[in-house]
Length: 222
Image (tube, rainbow, N blue to C red; front, top):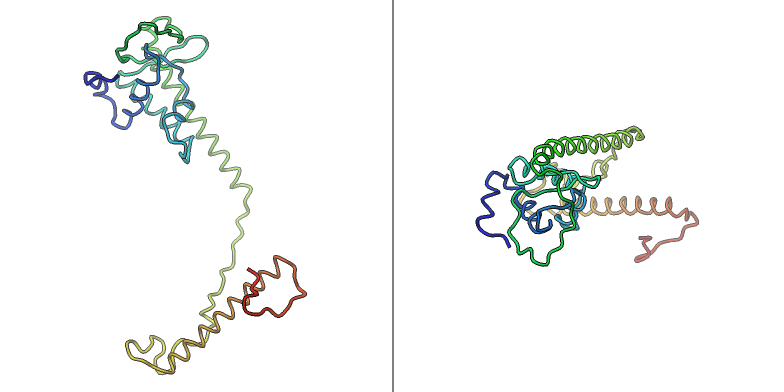
């Protein structure tokens, strides 16, 4: 259980790193120790619908470094791997508790050396991941041939006028005009016909159905 006095140990920590600190309090063992596994932390700390797990893991690394700089967290090496070590673990009842994480070889020297070692490893990992992403993106871009596409001519540029000759080009405004109504209907019919013609051409290209038949109302191929 987190007591009010425990929060004082996070006074120097950045606000956005505090959720990770709380997670470490609750997830590490009673001695404040656990594996330094960024993938495990990210997938347990962030929601399943997180869109970019690489960015989430980079954020976890940044928050780990911030908590180390704030004097809340350190790391040490044991059993051939790196472990997290809370400098201010929660006070818990240890009766009947079995601790399975390895002991630091020397708590004082591991704290000093762990901070620098973890920071450098974190930076190396971030640089490597960023380099890998950049290389993958360059490979994708190199495989693409930039072929300019000719723009499609808007149908309205070839359509009949929308207003009568008296009210071109802005229309009659609030006034009612019978010839404007007729020309507008003509333009709408022309546009609908051209759109249908293009859809029908696309259908024939996709299906190779060139035998054709007279399509009637309700017989559209889509």
